[in-house]
Image 1 (cartoon, rainbow, N blue to C red):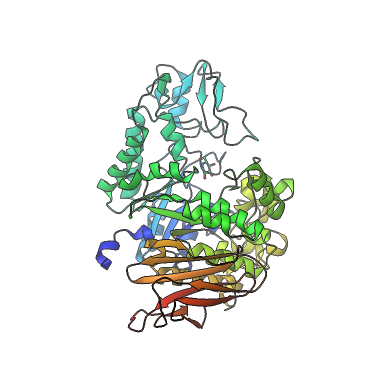
Image 2: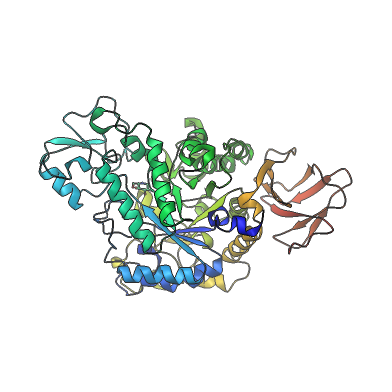
Length: 557
Ligand code: NOJ
């Protein structure tokens, strides 16, 4: 494939970085992060090697759900700045070759959105049918997403005299996407932000709003819900040809295939691989790579243009909902045994480094895995320096603490009094005093430098985003040995999830002693024998990235 055939499909080899403007950097000293602060740190993100920023919701919000409850889809939360500040931040990012995407939250609005205020006030409101109403809630209800706060997805509204549907908090009434007027609104919202310079969206709660298409008035109103997703993608493509829809679809792999649009690839451009993420934690807990290997092998075949987004941690609970009860318990026991470390009976509220007791070998091994897995890696802010959580913040907020820039007051996030901050700073061993950007930038052995190296190598190896994935046979359960092959390039990665040093014998089909395996993360190389076999030495929790190099190779290593 020529470069020109692939450069439009930038998402296949992107490095995505998710951040909440509110907790990233406060430039005006009022205690809340802002868009000017973000603009100040674009160069930092650029030097880390990030190629795509994902901005969590920055819209006006009463903040019941940390910004995922929106009162104006076209607005910018005045605490964060103005449209002008947002455009400046996007322009600065683009100038450094970075794209910007943002959350598109169209499953619901805030209950304070003018549409819902009007809808609940009168049955004859033009907005009444923007939401889903029932006189009596149906007998077979789906379970609420936040079971600690809600016991039903239907709430009776006194003013409206009816029940309304809300998959999340009751302050987030679900939009009735079966209504063509709502679908027009959604298209306009997308069109607006694309014109403002966004390169696509992280689409919130996709299966939920697709499901709503089928429940209008108890009738199936949209014959094939996926037609709607196809229509959204094609609308977006007409506006900005290379924009992406990165969908949140936490479903088994076979079901995710439908959300890609099968092998036609004409619905979501990318989807998070929640299954591989959950199995990875099971693998880490067991020190056994097999659950992760089987998850990766169970990915269905997609269109070559579709892409899996891989991640270690996101802004929500670390959900383990797709593990069995017993498997989930194993992960809880290993990484979050205390009740305050768990939430909704299905997830953990911790970040990776504290879960691994700060063991630098294991932390680096996990991020090496992340960047060597087939797909597009997504980082959550602070992962690059190994931030921890603040459990006292409660539930999902534990991992949404201010970014730690320096060892100074408030971790350099803000000059405001600590009591005015958007969230509490991390305390204890992972506090800014011990974990911050400033110190790690000066330390060549820091996690930040290591992550920068991983990102550089990921970007040097397009086979990781594009390639054919294979698990390589070898005798150790603790080891994942895999290869990604694309065009004439092949990367072999070997990770030891256990504490014992091992020598891993590999047999590499099609190779002979003319090939060498050259280390990409350190100096070194391994010879291949005439019969294609090679012996890879690994420390406990060790890892190697090996480029297959032939004598006539002109690749830069
Ligand atoms: C998924 C988001 O990731 C989560 O943070 C939010 O609470 C729900 N969707 C509702 O928007």
